[in-house]
Amino acid sequence: MWADTPAAHFVSDYVDVDGLKYPTRRSVFTLKPDGTLDRDFNAVTIELSDYALF
Image (cartoon, helix red, strand yellow):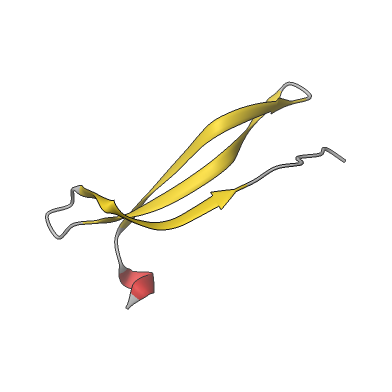
């Protein structure tokens, strides 16, 4: 089951929007059975842009 898979979430590539820092990239990697990071399997990468404060 995918939802029960242990994973590590990483955010990076921050931008400054009116003095607040926001990440533009989020990557999710699965964890191996021993709890170590499996860098060979990047489950999800999300790239964000056009932040705006209202």
